[in-house]
Length: 114
Image (cartoon, rainbow, N blue to C red; front, side, top):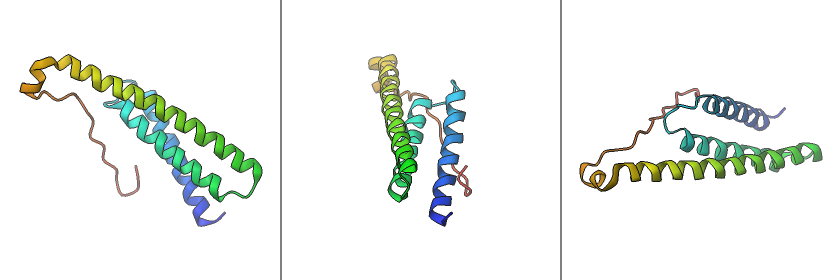
């Protein structure tokens, strides 16, 4: 296995773990927006696997995985937009003067990518 393939394998594995953790934690702050980013990243990783593969079965599987990740990214992006709209509606006209922010999570990645 080349170093590029190893790197992509590790990236897909990290993204899968992060995706599964976020899907399991229904109360994670800013969950929909974070899942959108994870699925978009996963789609890009699968796209790279597809581009580098010379075996038909592998590139077909990568293409299917990329399409699935893109579909899920779009779904979670719609949910995130709906949540933002709900948050703005909840603050009402007073929110424009008070500037009460909607809850959001800060995400920090350590040097090892976790």
